[in-house]
Image (cartoon, rainbow, N blue to C red; front, top):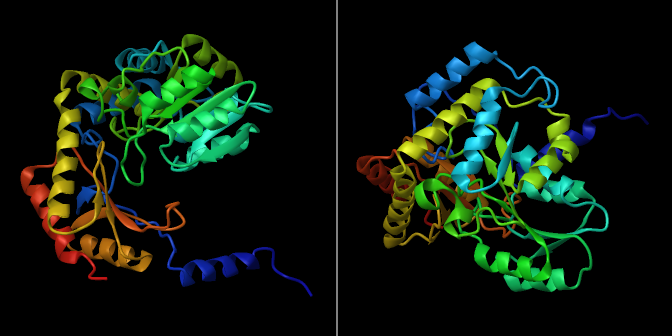
Length: 380
């Protein structure tokens, strides 16, 4: 009896449909039709005229693509400028730009660990960290969420190279990691600390310098951070920041740097323009936090259950996966785009709407968003 090689996909599709977990692509038009509380454009810069003009200028000057890996033809003066200014802004010795934040996390985890070393990873970490741990071939221990004592216990039991890794702000609930406590544990046990600051850059710290700057840890000898350029900076790409010797090591050892095409000039130019704009307008960081707090306080005052935001992500609980999907769809029909997180994307099994605050939202838009979310909230 013969079978078509991909018949198993139909079985998988049926299981997803039965569980209410089918994902679909929804192309958006060039001109926004909905009030956006779903994207990660925290500072409202992705359409800023200076940022889009910088992207266009970079494409005209340097070409549409990077043309090769960073070690061959893919590095430009723009890349070097962005790396230097990122490192200076965030308080680190050096930086290295990648084609995505995902690639940056894979690079840091695989190049700074390896067989015989230990990674201690928070249970709430992003999928890119999970995949980096798997690819590293290091012994990986997943510890309870935001638990420095659990991290210390695992580090004490290991002899040899070790690294603890955490998101700075967790993307599902928007809560912040206990970075000072984790840094203390790692310092005591002689381990490195790797912090994914994707949701902290541009929102936390003085003028948006990030979670490590806010915690007074930026530039520490045993600390490395990864960033994305696709959230607060409104562009695309990622970066690793840390001691110069760490960055030099990544240039020589990180496979997602050595074998990947460099970040396109347009994205590089846009990120650089956003960074410079943020330096000139540091109030944007505080405004994003203010909007997040306003959303949280107004929604919970009306009886909804939400997690108090530590940055720009506001997580609002839904009673079930189906209810979360219906709620998000009803918000969309009413003109508001919101995120919808449900199992298996959420490790705790709790479905929720994920709202992202933006620094450019007006008071009227905040009021409209809150009224819509409340009006469409499921009863059960």
